[in-house]
Image (cartoon, rainbow over all chains, first blue to last red; front, side):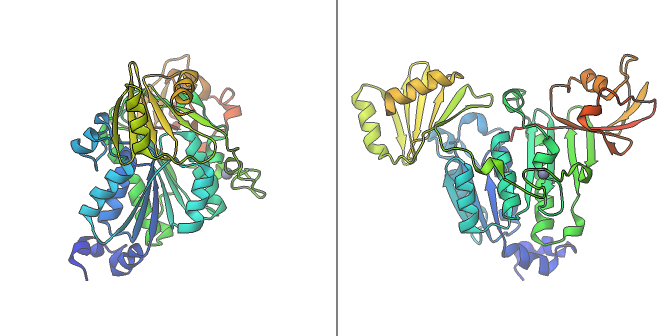
Length: 341
Length: 67
Ligand SMILES: [Zn+2]
């Protein structure tokens, strides 16, 4: 018996048998922000066999208050979150195989990831509803549990979706929120993050040790500042005609068209642009090209950052870009096409 | 009227008569929420017609996107 997990194995519902099961499991963590880093660290410490962590962003100073895997050096060097997370997680537990993917999670990419890597569990640590609808469709299509978690201000919410057992996210939401609801700008305090992480990881451990009867089965929410707690059994909202979990599913969010996609990022005064089709930039070449135009350029092996007065353009190797300093999609597109064609 | 909302006894103003009023009172009417009254989930189409009584146990969970 490995001393490292002794306390967890002494916990009867896990035990030695449970620990063996945990060590064989693969968890896909989608997002490496506050919830992603919290979930990933807990699961890695718990001795999960493998973790794949996907994130499209890089570390900034405003992340350090709550994103527990990152350091000042990561922010200074603008290290992609997936890479910085992997480095720290490998220090925490070298027994765990950790795979980092720098990129956006689209329907196509998520389906590929699931088919190729066959994760046992999906952890939602994203910051928007669009990606969650994709995760929901993919999870039900491939029969993989997924655990929703979200937080804003001092408020948080979580639910574990089990295909074949529970209603799906689609059933719960009925209509998909757009705009306003995604971009809450109320800030966030770290205990709200940690509380959601605790709810997610607890359900994750139950799923990993296959203790299905212990699942909470309730949608929970809390407000740590207003001192409130709510829990609702939502089984009754499952809809037979649901396009994701109903009798004849069509998984609508997996068949999104492959166009150039833009998104205004929550509370960040930034726009993300993902070009149609695959691009493959030589970042060093790109940096030199910008420098020749007299622009102020910073680069690392994962991205190139260009100062454009009020705005800053950050380009990743696959052509995805973040335009900081604007919430205007048209303005962002203009900048993108001006510098990247 | 006194309601038990998310486990806490809360006095709500007399204007609050329905689930819809209650959500507006808490400024949750523009959010997507799930509302349970005395252990029954109220469908959204019935928010305006579902009246609340003194002592009702109400659970409200609203969805957020941040993470
Ligand atoms: Zn459904």
